Length: 318
Length: 295
Image 1 (cartoon, chains in turn red, brown):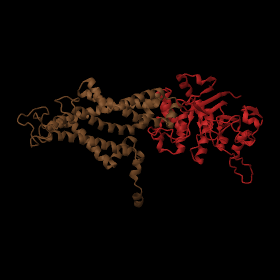
Image 2 (cartoon, rainbow over the protein chains, first blue to last red; image 1 turned 45 degrees about the horizontal axis):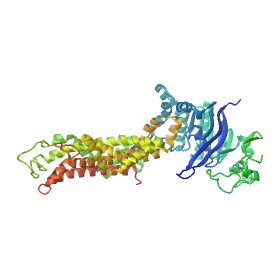
Image 3 (cartoon, rainbow over the protein chains, first blue to last red; image 1 turned 30 degrees about the vertical axis):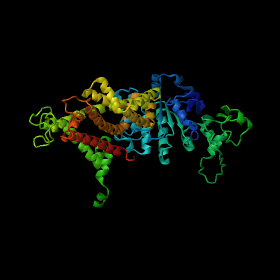
Image 4 (spheres, rainbow over the protein chains, first blue to last red; image 1 turned 180 degrees about the horizontal axis):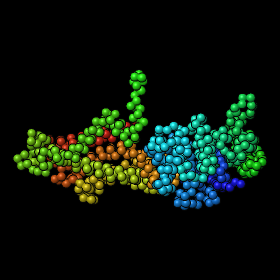
């Protein structure tokens, strides 16, 4: 039995790009009609290359950037209609872990101060704050002695633990992890990933895990959504996707993952051309200019995300 | 073992690790020669401002009838003015007047300028646009002209000169602060704070302002220098502190009529202004070097 905790319907985000006095305003479609459902307790991975809108999607869900259109239903209610106070309440249940641990901790504040911030923002009684801070810093693998220090005294991995502790302070239900390990060394990456998995069990968390690193997503995700130019083009169970990707873009993406077995021969699909400009996307299927299986219909019609063999694919091939 | 102690300066490692950011500034000032000397000179000037009235040899407003326009002598070290008042005593009393006006005017600029600059940068949008256009309009008038207009409207007095100088330097300060705050606004920890659900005011006070405090310190120091010049300028044209208050600009203006006969009348107040402004600017410059070694 899976209950959806987060449902995203036709989410769009356009950024105003050029505007002059005598000029038509032009927009960048960062997120273009995304439909996703995240079930309680699962980890949904979102992969895609740079600039495909995966981070913007994460920010839209927390309304750090205001979506242009669409619905974001968190536990059944559309948070886009929430007032300022309502959104403040909703933030208690959804927190974010950021990509760059060197930039997201205020250099002028002690860790104690940084971790207390969510408690102040959500009016947790003063008597409980200290205990919560001490408990949480130990949960993420640091100690009470670290609380009096400043962020610059920690290594990248430790800082990311502090970032996770901060997201965990309010015991949220959903954590949006925006490339939480991509700024870290590989050896530290696995520690942080294991920590995230332990926390998921302990606090029955739901993760929306945004990454460009396929091996990381393979390690942690239950289901994976592949994004291309602001759209979800394939959404499948992790095992299905990694065993047999269906969308040509997903196939090329997965063929780029290095294989540890030197005898295993795999065809490497190399794409030609660059990611098209999101301000002037191609007609039809957005991938058709780089696709090796391109048909005439691809140039004209936008493929809908439809169910194929127990997964969702947006391609005219199926 | 002794070899080890020589190569690793244990104490400096310890200090680096333990020194809190708020003591870092004092340490750094002591490390640089320019910063150190200007800092101590500034301390000395402030000390004179505080104890001036007690160390002054004479009453600054008392007329010595036997000594009109006397040159520097053993009794009147820096001479007396046209109506027989001791210049040294007037200078010592004047230090307090000038410093008070300059510091209070800068405090005014600091509070209003920081508030406008930071809220403008953080809130953005229409508020930012309107605020910055107002600042542009004020900035289009030269500061001293704006101050003149304000004093003319309020009437000449020491308090009004202070208010005028404070208001006249707000636009420049606000624009500088806004620029600095914009870079902090774009940083990850401000976004993290927003995602946590902290209120805008909390973010401005706890995230923005501490991170631009360096810039605020440097700019405020620089603005104190301009405020001293401004106070003296207003005093010189008779719109600052009113006689018989000993004020440097007023003294300079009284002395200018007797430059030929009594050089000491204008020279010493002029020197006093020069030394103080020079010290303040040098301190500001040194602080900027400390905070931003790149430029």
